[in-house]
Amino acid sequence: MYNYCLIRLQYITIINCYQKLERINIRYPRTINRYCPKCRAHKQHNVTLYKKGKERMLNQGRRRVERKKRGYGSFPKEIFHKNAKLNKRSLPILECPDCGKKQYSKSYRVKKFELQEV
Image (cartoon, rainbow, N blue to C red; front, side):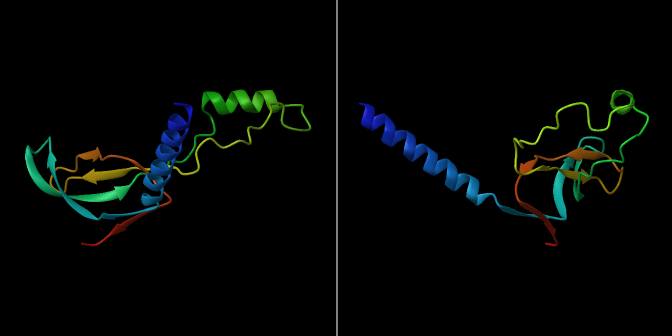
C-alpha cells in the first residue's frame, strides 16, 4: 500500500510539472470578440495588459515607513528576501471600441505573455 501511494504521488507530481511547463509562453490576440455588458452586444474588443500605476509618496503606508526609518542608519525592519512566486500574473484588459467600457479577462501566471496580431 505504501509503495502504491508513493508511486501515485510521484506520478501526480510529474503531471503537475508537465502542466506547469506548458504555460511558459502565451500568445494572446490583440483583438478578441467578446460580449460587452454596457452595449449588450458582441464586439471586437481591443486587448491591453494591466500595468501597475505610479506609487503615491504621501499615502498612509509610505508615511508610516518613513516615520519609522527616521533616525536609523539602516532599515529598521527585516527585509523579506524569500520570494513566494516566481512569475507575476499577466492580466489582459478588454476595451469595447464603441462605449469604452473596460473589463478584465482571466489572468495567467506565465513567464512570457505576448500580444499578437491575428
